[in-house]
Amino acid sequence: MCNREAPEVEQFARQHADALNIVGFGTQDSFEEAEEFRTEHDITFRLLWDPSYDSWQHFGITSQPNAILFDKDGETIAGWQGALDDSTYQDILARIGAA
Image (cartoon, rainbow, N blue to C red; front, side):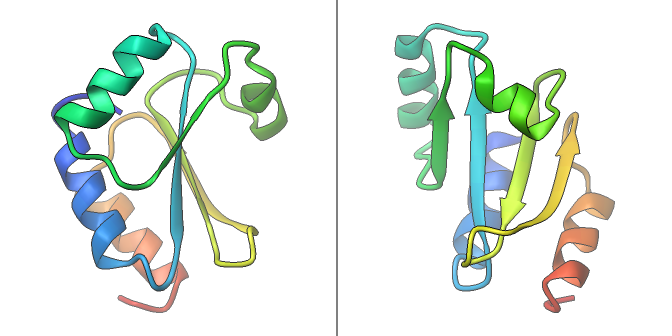
């Protein structure tokens, strides 16, 4: 995710923490830059740092920004590549029955 969308993703994650988990995948910046990003945007959801890109291969990720939504049991319920928009949020809410 980028600086522009980070606050919206964080707000969405907090508002729906009882229904889903958001996991961000990072590899393209340094670990220090990723930690600065987390701190700057007060990110509370899980960010996975994987310099090997193994997680990208496992989940079919080909570019950033990218995110995958898992239910409380760890099952994938939605995923997307690119910046988030209102229709993506509405789609996610519909999938978890919160629309």
